[in-house]
Amino acid sequence: MTAEALAEIERDCPACGSAGHRPVPEYSQGPWRMAACTSCGFTYLKNVPDYSRLVSEFAWEKTWAEEAKRRKSERSAFRAVDAATSFRWKFRRDAGARYLKVFGAGRVLDIGCGRGDSLPAPLIPYGIELSAGLQAESDPKFRERGGYVLLGPAIEKLGDFEEGFFDGVLMSSILEHDMNPRGLLTAVRRVLKDGGKLYLKLPNFGVSNRHVRGPKWCGFRYPDHVNYFTVPDLERMAKDCGYAFTQLNRFAPFSDNMHVLLTKP
Ligand SMILES: [Zn+2]
Image 1: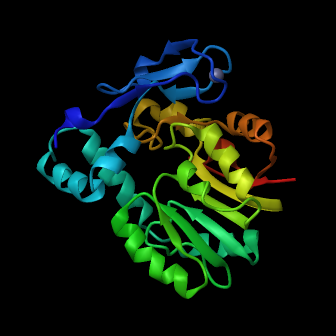
Image 2 (image 1 turned 180 degrees about the horizontal axis):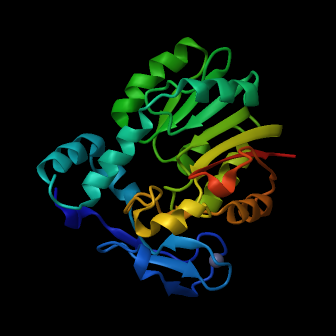
């Protein structure tokens, strides 16, 4: 497989749908072009890789990992995705305690569940995972606890669950990757019961550190981070999609990541 197999999609603003934009060359890298929406101000990657095609046509997580090893010296999409997958594997114990506190009990869906180590008992864990290898690993663990893991893209697989099925949904380091964040938030809302909670963790483009570090800020990953939300950007989109918005980390202006709770009223 060659880099040419990585088809690209050119998109309009994923926040407001406007085509109007100005280039942001200081935050662009190689073939990947950053843009700022002239209607709503949202910052996003203008051209994004078409992952759906790759997922359907290749056993990509293996192919890409091998490809990444071969292309170590090269800045390639394969390498970026390999890195994106491996960082999700890291389990943080205090995150588990936090999720338990937020969700309490019931059925919780972990989108991009990886190895399936994020949701502690007594939560009943469900997952959606894009990597066949990780789905094979997490599915038996979740089945032992009453849930299961579906393999495939998030928006598509959310359609397999009935409306109002979940007490909670976890999206940790997901929303910044999805080329259709608004569609994803809407699809998640459908599967939440009334009062259900969506816990979001994602890079905070509004952080003061980004102004200090500039293009070296840790939130930039090309091309796998395609949406660059500030807290107000996310609040606007969440409310448009029918959620109540609560910011969980109080020091967001100084935090590279934001933790946010969206509630279906
Ligand atoms: Zn916009």
